[in-house]
Image (cartoon, rainbow, N blue to C red):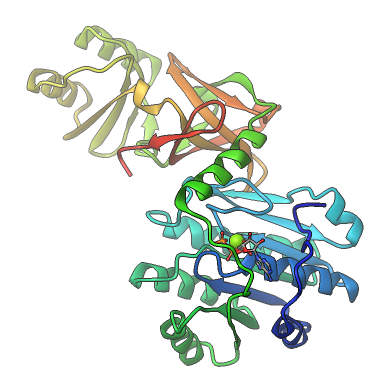
Length: 362
Ligand SMILES: Nc1ncnc2c1ncn2[C@@H]1O[C@H](COP(=O)(O)OP(=O)(O)OP(=O)(O)O)[C@@H](O)[C@H]1O
Ligand SMILES: [Mg+2]
């Protein structure tokens, strides 16, 4: 099984002592910069835990260089036996919406917490958390701090080239003194990936994920939209959309109104002059009016939230277009009736999974 195969590497001798130190942990977090060998160490540890009959949940919170899931998501895989390694099937997917934690710190923290909880609810003996290489700067420290605070790992394995994690580790030992900290050098064979190799790797994962996707449509009446430009308030009624379209002389496909703001999605790009603006303000009695050409949504990655799946998604989709009352998308998810929430991410993809840009409003 290629995914979790440790390959032909020689396991560095210090990995063996790391395993001895973590073998009784309920939660292990691996921290380190990019290409330090975090995921390879985790694969080794999973294999060692299987040898002592532990049910391990691999919580992959690397939203860029994902191992078990698709980039933009935090996923988990429950592994009870070596047999499970042959046909790994992701147990849960939590949507973050970007291939990096920047701008998504809340979602990263909530996602890891929910995924770890879910792993224990699925009777994992322990969880091992993989993380992104985002380790430098105040936002990174805060992200890691909150993740640690919420998931309370018994052990943290810190892989560092020099002393780049020491600030964070000092914080951890002051705030959570019972957490065991294990320091490791990067594996000597660890290979560094260039940004373009990282992108190619993500695109390969997207293209595999969307290879069996179909073009489908979802009725906007049946779902709630959130993040991106959405989530401002209730959808505008068909009557209001009709009246606004008539008033403006261009088609308003979808709209939302909050307490003092409103959003319109329009058929094509329109220049919202002051006359239009005051017409919209008067008609809806709102101060702030936002307008978005539906073409700007094309390619947006979305998480399709099931009605009963709590925070977890049924799968991902890519927006094709918004039409009157519905959204057209490409997705491998089959049962669209189960979808209750569509969450917009900031990344834009071609239907083949190529990264083609970012949403402007993030
Ligand atoms: N002990 C080792 N011996 C030989 N090669 C290794 C070893 N550990 C890791 N590698 C290789 O080095 C590369 C980086 O390792 P890995 O993917 O585990 O790092 P990472 O820290 O998880 O990287 P990322 O930042 O992409 O998540 C991989 O190609 C992996 O196969
Ligand atoms: Mg990795």
